Image (tube, rainbow, N blue to C red; front, side, top):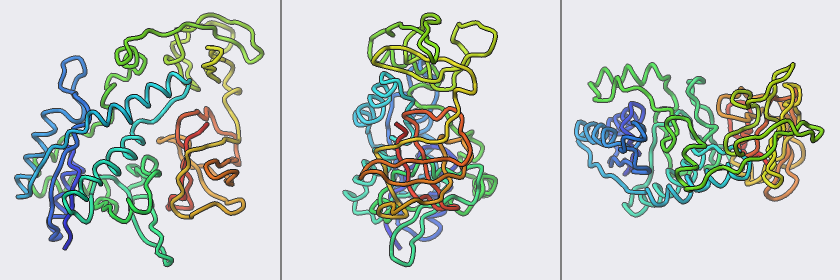
Length: 353
């Protein structure tokens, strides 16, 4: 059997993943990544807390496996938090969970596994890894469609897929809970954490102001034709499709349809202004193929909770793709990821620009 470094967050999913790997006979090491100091009273409780570390350690003790805490806070601030701030200041809406997976779990954590001479890393993600007849590694949806996490994993490389295990890919969430209860797992009844760790209250603008020590630069709300409609509080307070909190009044509901960091304007319009059929994405990562040849019929997701929609994709440059949907999509948002699927298999994805 193989030596496996397991990312243990103190939650039920990673706990059950560790149990399954130990039961399968692997030489297991448990480790928590300390990414953010969430133990301050001002931040509330979220991931990486002392309680989470204690829960993860309790599971490791119950499984009789070594347990470590890796302090990655400096790297997390640089490649996740600072990128988050920079993107918002550019009028974009990033997904920090994608960056966390890309740069922390499957880069920093995998590097630590190599240093420990572990053949694999493992996480509690709901996804599957397989290999096609040509030897190419594939990422595909987990069997529990409601918990599928492939959207935030699309940036995984061939090397990373080859050295990663997803034990929960073949299980439904209910089965994971049942297994945790049946094995008296200390985390069996623990609720899932779904907040962004450094902004658990959802106040992203407040986090950015605290992190940078700078306030927002006010500017104008404008109509699609350029008419000034009022004053906005600063670009970081808004995202595409937003309706609430604009402070604008008129005969029809107003929605944010564009953010311009150069002119410092927020364009607002009607709901109809939010729909479009085509997007461009860069910083792409392709998994199922080396390069897109010609036009490919796929399904595409433009945000984590967005159902995949029928579309066509083609590659226009080494690092740029275009996606055209069969039906107009609402609030396609720069900074978010577009992830491409062929059935359950992830073709690849990129950042909407």
